[in-house]
Image (cartoon, one colour):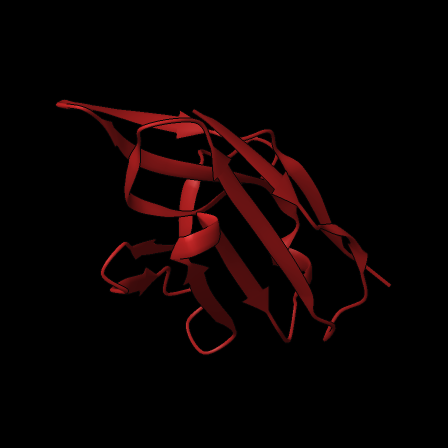
Length: 118
């Protein structure tokens, strides 16, 4: 199973961006999938995550500014972030808990840099 992330880049404060993450492979099912971020010198933290059933949870720091959604047919998750702040600057990673047959494993996509700066 592979996770392919896209989106990110340089955004001005108050701006918006959309991140996408697509899972590919064979004979797998996604338990939950979402976005995490890691700022320099900090630990990786959850930004938002959504289950296959549609349940979502968000970090307090992005509540009201972020919306995570999914397209189960495409095995793709989207993260829309608005009102971006400089403190949102980080490397964003897509992560997913995936079941293959009876085995559960966590997968990571490549990181994508998000920089919020004027």
